[in-house]
Structures are given as structure tokens and as C-alpha cells.
Length: 279
Image (tube, rainbow, N blue to C red; front, top):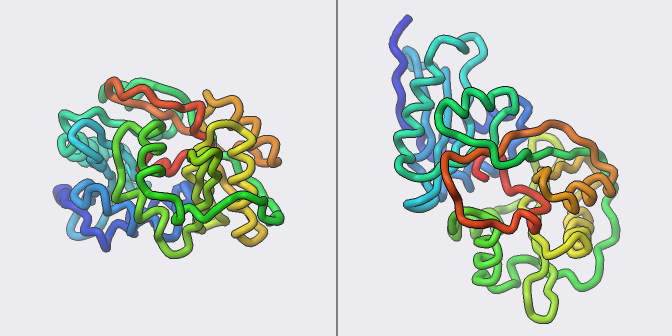
């Protein structure tokens, strides 16, 4: 067999990785690829043999301290051949000396530990078919909120500033954002986006369950009836209660892992993860 050649995916090629993720059941958003290229266009890798794609991985550098790894996929017929380890090492080298996070398949936790990752908590994807409700009162379009408020609030729940990514995520065609203000402060906000199957809500950030529920209702009101998915940190019991209260059921689980310490985060305010691929 010919040797594996590793190169960067160009921004317009990231849809290849998204397509492979869809085939693995990760159900990416329809516009995820364009948004994902924004924080670090050099953070996406492709392994090829004789010009044929055989492996992908991403390790996106958000700043000089934090990166997030995703899209780690080897073509099914070539798994166990060592190609995965080679492209994995290329991605890790791209991020060093940063702390790296990932949402990994639970069964692969031991392998990730060998690369220095330690379990922080589990994330659980909930899904189900929900009808669009009437929009609640008091909610505003997220893009009408001063971006500095959203950026500052996001900094309480994510290990790095991701301003350019957030702007794109909120403003991308097809993505709908809603926010709840209390006494001039941002109490809750979230985004819903169309995916290969149904829609996903993420991020969903709120001071409490009641505020989170209000945002969920507003986001659902903007979407058609159908399947809805919400990725919830298992350590946030109020977020679990919210998902179950909506009638959503667990679909699968990931292991959120890090290679080192991260800033203290308000996981109690995370009612929905932005993305398993970029954190």
C-alpha cells in the first residue's frame, strides 16, 4: 500500500469532514463547515493515499492557550492500519503547547488517556420530535443584543474567546438566535440551526432553567415541527431536567476530556453545547 500523505484541508474542503461525520451519525449542521473554518483555517487535516481521502481530524487553535480536537475519523476499511495515529499526531503537534479539549466516543476514552487526555464530564445528546410552540413574550433576536454582552457571557462557559466564530455562528443564514434580558443583563441566549436530520439547539446558555426554557420555546417557535437535538453536560442536572421535561430522550453520549487545566467555567449555565466538533 502507498504511504499516507497528510495535508491541510482547505476551507472549502471542510465539508468533506462534515460529510464523514454525518455518515458516522454525528449529524452536523448544514452550515457548520463554513463556520468551523473561521477560528483556525489551518486546523483541519486530511490523510490521503494515492490521492484518495482515508482519514480526517481537526485541532482548532482558538488562542495561544486552548485548542479543540474533532472530526477524528478513519475510513472504515482502513481502521487499525496506523493511519489514524499518524494524522492524530499531526493534529496534536499543530496545537502544542496548548491545552486541548475534545468530545470523544466513550469507548475510546482509554485511547485518549494515552495521549494525555483526562475526563472532565460526559455530554449527552438528547433528541426527539417536538411541535413548534407559540413564541414566548419578552424574547428578542440575538443579533439585536450588543455583541460585547454575548461575547462576555460566552467567556464564562467556554475556555477561550471565540469572537469571530460566534459572530459567524449567530449570523449564518439559516441559524436563528434568541435572547432574554433581565434588568439590562443577558439572562439567557441560544441558537438553533438546521442539521442533516432535524435541528440542533446550541449553544444554550442561561442563568437558570426557567430562562433556558424560555429561550428553547422561542427557538422552537422559529423552526418547523420535527426532530430537535440538544447536547447537554451531564453534570448540569437542571439542563438534564430541561431536556427530559421537553420529552427528549438520550441518543448517545460523549466524553468531554482535556489535556490540562482550563479556566474555571460556569458549566451550571451550559444548557446546550455549541458543537461536539469545536466545543
